[in-house]
Amino acid sequence: MDDNEHCRNKLKSCFESAGATVYAMGYLEKAIVLLSGMKQENALPDLILMDLRLPQCFGLLALREVYAYVQDSGCPIIVMSHDFNSIARSKMVFYGAVAYVDKPVKAERLFNYAAEIYIESLRRAAPPQSSETPVLKVA
Image 1 (cartoon, rainbow, N blue to C red):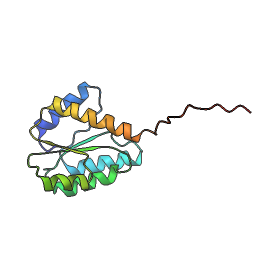
Image 2: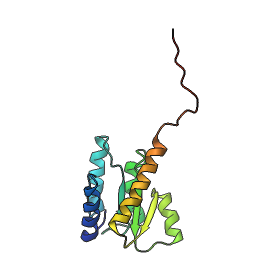
Image 3: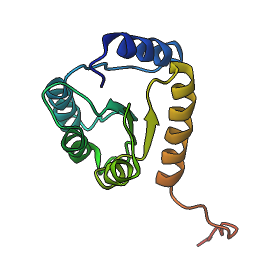
Image 4: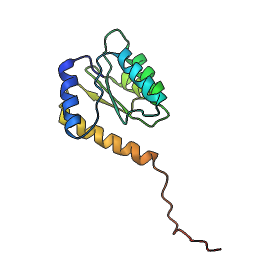
């Protein structure tokens, strides 16, 4: 989600060139409608990138609203913005962001960072590997 069309299109192109399906939104309301439908179909996104400065909404409340849809899915949210400070960063984590990126950011750099975060989220969601050798029981 980003209200800047140029930024949105650049990121969309970068992620699609890697084979990702991208839903690019400029308004929170449209994103919430999409997330609501995806949640009903049990098909939430694997990753969300969102600008905190969206039209007609307060950034942290928007983050909280988005997080409410994906909190049980393990979907990481990466926040992008121009004006981070330590207080805002701690609040972003509290409201569900796993990472934040200062804007402007190069699409390719953000893609690589997002890929690392996504892979880490998969690793955390995977069942723990047993260090014991499996035992085959024969009756």
